[in-house]
Amino acid sequence: MAEAVAYLSDNPGPQVPFRFRLGDRVVSTLNGDVGVIVWGRCRYTVGGGDYADIYEVQRPDGLHFLAKQSEIKPQLDQPGRQGGAEEWRSRG
Image (cartoon, rainbow, N blue to C red):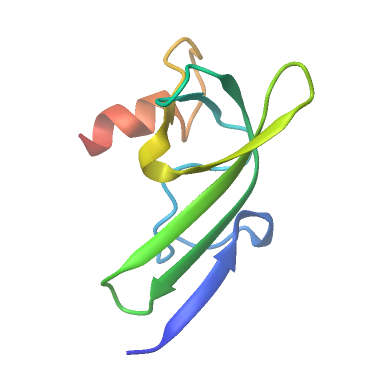
């Protein structure tokens, strides 16, 4: 199967396995830092299979950090935000 790379800034379709979207507020599971997703890349197998995604998160103080999907989770106090906490809960 073919491998592909997609970026959040390209507004990829649902076939790309991104867990988060630009603007989603997240919390680091490693150190508790909070911030907003400002960039993301996903390397994946077309048609399903392995994938690796990485996100750049901007903290409130302006600093940035990189995190894998497994190292961040939605900040659950963002009522009405689609694609963030509500989507996370629906995916189980």
